[in-house]
Length: 350
Ligand code: KG4
Ligand code: ZN
Image (cartoon, rainbow, N blue to C red; front, side):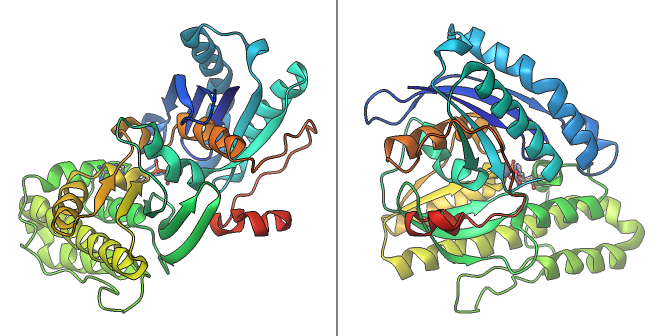
């Protein structure tokens, strides 16, 4: 089966085509991505209306590019999948509208996909795919969650942030330091030249005894520290960046290890944009190696938003028999949508 996937939940337009022949992990045939980062940088963050308008401009040319790369025609596509949520409502509506219109024109079934399920399954596209069951650390711009994943469609929430997400903590701290949007990659690059122990920053909820996170206080501590430094901030910025990164990473690593202990599982999957962070990867690798735990990551290209993970998640749900293919072309989007609500027994409530 050929599954076309369209992602448009935030500031990246992604399109991809996978082939779900047999029971093997769907094979990625082609993918194309357009990032709006340059456009939003002038505003210091994503401007939702501009994001929606840009998705409209990009989605069809990217679809044509994907079909051309894969040397297939749209008529050969069996299912069209799109990100139904969570994300920016206007941006989601573009992907949903285009997917449903294309599907209606081609008389093909259409399928809405949960963006976080895409992130969570994205390591299956890597050369070293995980096996079920595993613990997933989902760390993106909008979410920070630990989940127990027993199979496709079975996602049990173990803990999550009670305020800001880890990506948000990177982005907001970076903004306070005058770094460009999106702050995560810029802050971590600057941190390479700094000392992570230079400033004592809080590790919120580190000893809370549960698997929840909190990052809002960290951002305030970074602001207080920046104010205290005053004109000295410029020369100490790398140290402040390194200390901020060290605090976020330490919390993510320790909570992930607690989740491994609590579940008794031996595999950890890290997904979402913050999963690209080099310090997080090296510290998790070292800590897990000591405990005989295998850690899996998506390829760097598939850590941040992309169409491949949406086509993949659709393909894997179809293979698992979790979807009845719909030929109805009315659609809605879900800007807020709990991943745990995808549990098969809860699916009827969707
Ligand atoms: O998964 P994603 O592309 O979008 C959402 O679904 O939110 O994640 C974007 C987030 C941003 O907050 C960005 O700053 C962060 O991932 N990010 C990073 C790195 N690369 C992206 N954070 C830290 N270090 C990085 N290397
Ligand atoms: Zn995402």
